[in-house]
Image: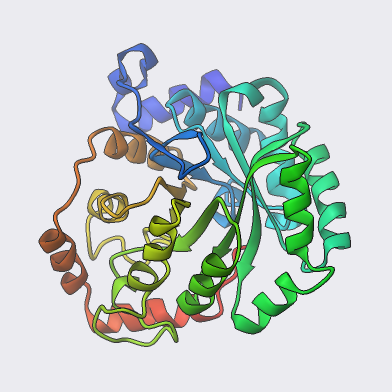
Length: 318
């Protein structure tokens, strides 16, 4: 399916032809990306498992092109997604649209030597000579942090990449251990970070058990460190891998994350209509009050939170 036919299909499926006229769109809101000097749209395109759900290669490329057309220009991929398939897909688009986007990828390596190899391969796959953002992927726990920061660890390689202008910003991501992320952010000179932030996880502890919202969830433990150090924050898992959709309206879930002190939310959008809907929600976003955010969290039942807990406890987006 070529790009023109793809966009036509989206229009027919959504009954939203006027939305597709790009000149009529107001631009997505932007925010500062911490202290980096980069401005980013508040909505990013996640290229992990949800992007890989596009079975047809051309359909996936058309989806990413359409997202960029709509102003979703923060592109979030990783060396390990789909065994490299995600970066290769993104690279097909970067071959012609590299200057339009803020490009982020992540390294699963834990040694400097392996990280350097991954950087070279990622640059090749993505048809670029640089990244705007380079993350250490998926900090698991404090033991994992020890391997990251050890002599000859991956931390050496990403500092080196920033010094050599291969990347403008360096960061670290974490799905399930707020205390480990807090420690990493306190100890090291990261420019950005990516953490799981949603209305369900707001009531999780750092051991990912159900508990009242408090000082041991990402929102209350790791996020304040990032804010204090002027680190750019990317919210991920805002829909809980769709497990929260239906309990709370999607636009409210997105608004919850964007009402926190974050730069943007990176969202996987496995269907064309999700791209249109999320872009519209981002354009119409208004901040929720603390009381409104607390009400959203309370609206998610304990059983659903427990299911979310079980899912994210060992979750890896590869």
